[in-house]
Structure formats: structure tokens, C-alpha cells
Image (cartoon, rainbow, N blue to C red):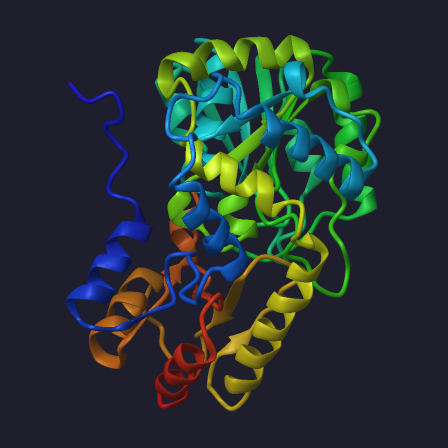
Length: 375
């Protein structure tokens, strides 16, 4: 008997496979196709000949953990204790999975804001807990009245994603005030803050939960080096949590992966001495602006994008087909792969919206845009 009877193959896997099968340009799955920083690959090449190929300590490579603590301090003016409040994970998804398995028990409820990343729900179900899916407003701002009504004495965790995938929205000051107000009414409610796109914001910087004094003792932060440094295949991220929560998270982590790839940790540890994460927003803003310019004469309506490397677009003036069918035809008939937004909703809400990934080199964006503008 299946433990996840209603969970099917991820839409990202489906669309990427179709893109490969039809030789389409893949703007669906969120991975860059441009070269990794040569400074990082040079460090990696050097380290292959050094003694960094065995297990690291379970929680992470100590030099990297110290570097992460410095990064958090420099980025958010928050001081964390690497030994007790930090865990290096095999990608952000493992950090999310491990956190939920460690902290959510049978009968608990977890608030998930739709549209949502598809890796949030499955670990909740595996805990014999209940995912409570609450839709954002049509402009993708949170409806705090609806969210508050969804909270109960059984609520254990609320998951926020900021900057938000797939919509590119960022939370505002008032959103955090509303969240903190709800937490004050539910003393057992914790927050899982998925901030894997934290350094990819544009006109306005995102507000991190790291900076909210009222949240620090009740929030688990999830970050991703894969997203920040264009190395998604390395599958390396990190989680920050108060010591009393991190103790429980580490209990699961040690039996799930024990420790994370050693050479990746060593390489990133050295790279953090020379890279400026503050330049990432500018780099991706140029990508966003160029992609939007390429599509300005298309029939698609582009939605605002405040962060991440995803562009949501409406095709309502082009077709009345549901978004899954439209995306499949976009591949088979036009040679471009995108992701249908309805798959991020529990009720598959279809607003004729799709998501393009613009973390691609200019040649790829230009080739894709030509095909899109011909529709």
C-alpha cells in the first residue's frame, strides 16, 4: 500500500522529460544553464588533490559552518552559534524534509500557502499529519484573515516562502507584523521560512525572518547554496534554527544522510571568502529585464517579478485551454517548456498562468523568446 497514494511524478520531472523528448528549450525546471564561476571551479579542482574526501562531522564541515555564521551576520546582522544552531544539508529540500519529520507529529496540522513548492506536502503526509492548504490572494499577497482562520490548536507549523516560488513575490513589513500577531495567539506554532532565493531580489530587498526578533526562537530558516551560486546539482544548503529545535532536526538528519558531500562543503567554504552575494540580485535583474524586453511584443501578459529567477505569464488572450494542456502543447507545437501554475495548488486552480525560468544564458533566452513571440 502506498504511503503517498495521491502523490504523482513531479511536474518538474514531467516537463523536463518532455522537453528532452521533443528537443524543446527548457525554461521549466529551475536550474541555470550558464557556467559556474571559474573561481569556484578552480577551488574545486585544487581540492580534488587534498584530504577532503571523507566524512565531515554530522552537522557540517566546521570551516564552512563558521563561514555561514559570518554570512548570516553580514547579511542580516544576526549572530548564530554554528555548533548548536546550524546544520548543513543535502540541498534545501532535504532541510525542509528533515525539519518536518523532526518536528511534526501524528495529528498535527501544517499551514501551506498556495501556490506552493511541491516538496512541502509530502513530508507532512509521511508524518501522518494534515496539510492545510490556504490560497494566497489573486495578486499573490497573503490573505492573513484566511490564514488566521486556518490556524487551530492542532497547528504546528506554518511554511512561508520568501522570495516566493513560483510567483516571484516578496513579503512586506505588514505581512511579518500579521504573522507575528498570529504567532502571539498560537504559542505552539512554529515557522519554517524557505528563503532559498534570498539573494535574488531586485528593486526591493526581501525581509528575512532572520531580522525579526519576534520570530527567532520559533523559526527554522532554510537556505540554498545551489540556488545562490548556480550549482543546483551540488545539492547543498543549510538550515538555521534555535538550539532546542535544531537538536531534534539533527536527530533525523544523522539517520537520513548523516553528513553532506565533503568536497562541496570545503569548496564553498573557501569560495565564501571571495564571492560577493550582494551582486546576485543585479545579475539576475539584468536577466529578468532582458527576458521581459524580449517578450514585450508577445501575446503573453507578464506578471510582476520582485525576486527569484522565475517569470509568471498569462496566456488568457491566446488560449482557453487549461494550463497543463497549454504547457504540453507549448513543448510539442512550439518547442519551449514552461511550468503550469495550477500544479502548485491543492485544488489545481487554473488562472491561465505559466512559469518561465529566466536563469539561462542570453542565447537560450533569445531562442526561446523568438518561439514564444511567434505564438
